[in-house]
Image 1 (spheres, helix red, strand yellow):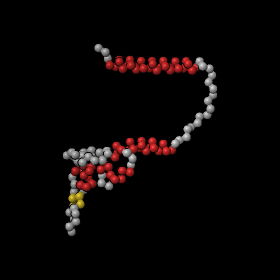
Image 2 (spheres, rainbow, N blue to C red):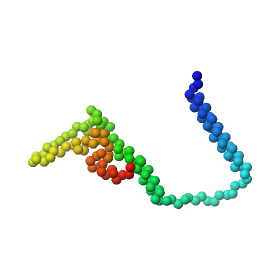
Image 3 (cartoon, rainbow, N blue to C red):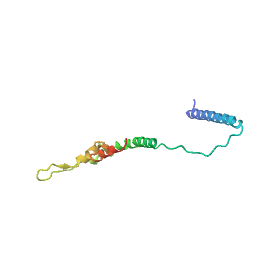
Image 4 (cartoon, rainbow, N blue to C red):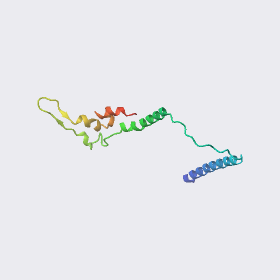
Length: 128
């Protein structure tokens, strides 16, 4: 019976031999070619600000997009959900009833920041 650990160890050993063998062959070819000319001072390339901002914005979009749809109520759609219980007040003088279901409804349905009534519109400003 062959051990799986032995196979992985053998593959790692073969990979190390291949890498070390290639490194020593390259070192042998560069040392025998004679003296190398002295290199000048290191210089940095100029940064393209447009490309840097574009890369930052697209990377930020990939990072922020999951946060906007992250489920805020871990007990959503369960019997333990405390946001599922709402309170409604019926004012006098024939005004419309005011309840908490408008604010807690999207959360108790399993929504994220983008599903909230007021904050959801503002989250559209964020990239992603």
